[in-house]
Image (cartoon, rainbow, N blue to C red):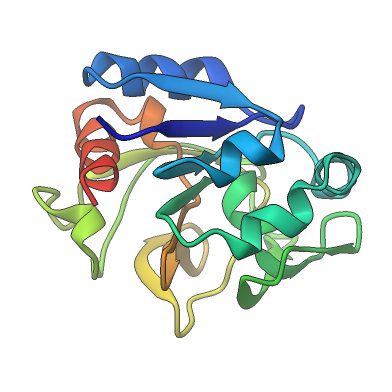
Length: 194
């Protein structure tokens, strides 16, 4: 059985993610210990909160150096995905730089946060095996990653943005698969089988 670790850094929605993984029959460990994270077979990098504060937590624990060096599959969720990018406009924050992308604030004409169920499209990864174009997933965010080279799914909310991204062994979902019912459960299961 794979050793699955959820990174604990004071900004994660750990309980829901843990319950979703355990509901699929997997064991999971939540840890802030870099050694434990380095020994994982799969890593989940969740996040809820503010980018600058979350990056401070990652730097204090040394996780800012550990995460980019991981060679196993890593799934960033919501803020976790945004922190894997090079920069976020939220708090003028330098990210981990795994994805050479910038996280931008939704336009002023948008109602923020973008919260609720929206369809995802242009699915381009094994993460979405068994997921149908237009399936609904759950979002809660005020910042987004524009569509670009690493985009593997899009969503429209006043504009098209990256619902999911991928580079090498790193995947990111702007939505919350752990709160996205059967569709999200399928994505988590696909990730854990990689």
